Image (cartoon, helix red, strand yellow):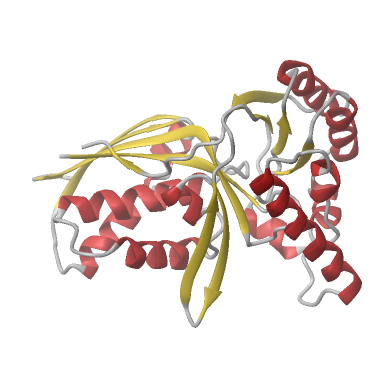
Amino acid sequence: MVAVRVPATSANLGPGFDTLGLALSLYLDVEMDFADDAIIEFKGEGEEDLKNNPENNLVLKSANILLSKAIIKKNLNIKIKNEIPIGKGLGSSAAAIVAGLFAANKLIGNKFSDQQLIKWAVELEGHADNIVPAVVGGFVTVMLYNDEIYYQKIQIPSNIDIIVVVPNFTLSTEKSRSVIPEKVNIKDTVYNLQRACFLIASLNNKDYNKLDKAMDDLIYQPLRKHFIPGFNDIVDNAIDNGALGIALSGAGPSFLAFAHDNPEKIGSSMQQGFNVHGVESKLYYLKPEDKGLVIVK
């Protein structure tokens, strides 16, 4: 029997579209073993949906893909406990894909390398900015070159607070991506490049004074904000109440904010931004997760 734990992740962090990602202290736990008959047990976020639509279970799908690549035909007994909200921009699909691939690989004696598993995971997910931090943890910047995936990792101090507000509606990645133009003008591109580089340097140097400006962008958030009631109120409330910086988490509709002090005050103000527009939400007070994927046993 194999057990793995995979963290939630937040991608983009403002200017780093499909490039930057951060692992968070919210987890998907999976136990896996071979069995005579296929058995799936699921508890936690997404439980009802996956009971009614088992074909959407990415842990099982990814594990079966791995076994097929190893030319192994066996049934699996899988137990899943999930803390990560589904369809909220917190890397739930990336966590499930990573858990399925790495657990199945461990089960067959680590036939494939971690780099190969990451590559397959990115192929299944469609982009690397959630997959890589889910595997290696920390804050990462990813690069694709000749179909290979490269990354650099920065450790963010554990004294940084992360506030995530999750509204009670979902926003699919496909819908979020549909509004992004195929071509972006040079002025907006430079704007985002400047901020992405500044954000990386700020986190690396532990200098957070300009994070609010570094987490801005002109490429995707202005287009996605129309899907999210209270977008401007949430951002303004967070900054006015002391957040170091705030951005959509991945494709949204959740928001992620960094803070040094008063996370509850900041979180409450972010939640109020949704409330005034009639949207209920849930708050998570998290930390950066430096470990990434853990093979528990």
